Amino acid sequence: MSSNTLAKAIQLREQKQYAQAETLLRELLTSNPTDPQVNYHLAWTCDAQGKESDAVPFYKTAITNGLSGEDLRRALLGLLWVSW
Image (tube, rainbow, N blue to C red; front, side, top):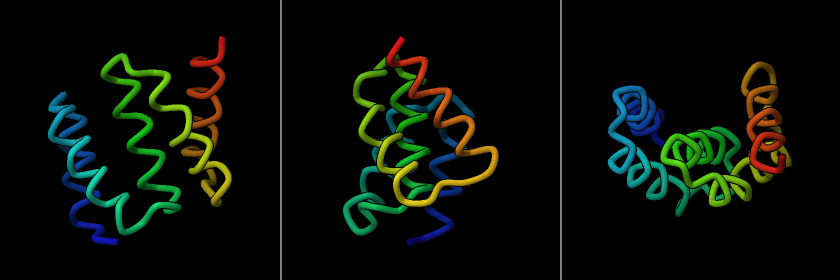
């Protein structure tokens, strides 16, 4: 996985350039389908765009594949919020 590409996607999301961030993250996902960070940030990006139901499988994959720390807490919260 390219950490530079992930960092760029996160930066784009933070700048509210969600479509561009999603494109980069989906590209990363094709070669890293179980990477917890890619899945987590793609879920977050979907959530930010109001596509909460699209975020669910990415949150689940991130959690299942070893997401930890604060990112895990946020993913669990995001998943709970979507399911509410």
